[in-house]
Length: 207
Image (cartoon, rainbow, N blue to C red):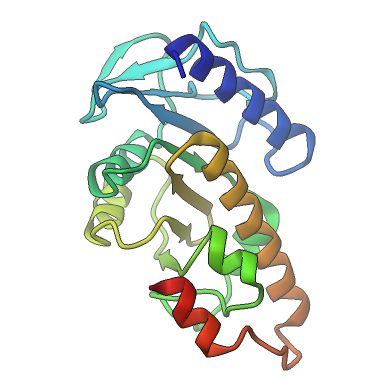
């Protein structure tokens, strides 16, 4: 896709996520990596529902602001995922309700926060790490993501929300929606004894 098409795609996905209730207010941010390693990212304090393709921030591979409006305060988060998951072409970060709720639960496994509930969770999301609480915009959050070594494409930020990296913006969008629905299922079932996906299937999708 051309840069112009990617700009339009960011706005289309942002509007879709906002209109379907996956994000609210001016929360959440999206980015797409360009062929030269730099990336486009949504601006700070702007609703994903009203993005303008001509008003996206352009940053270099390290997260340095090159042009456009001031970027989201979560630049370090995006830059860390691009740096450690080199095949990633897009990053989506939301404050979606069920994922945030799961991130507040006690005794989550930091290396595998959600049980294997569905095959599509395993296919689209994979294992989900959870990081401790950081103040939004804290560069240390980017360092914590980088310390995961690129093993995870999906991460929960405690008391904050999910972030997902994907090969394309569309794939990242699908994955974060699947993560949110998995989080919803987990909350519905966590006082039950749900039948999980068989371990043989978990191993198959993790290969």
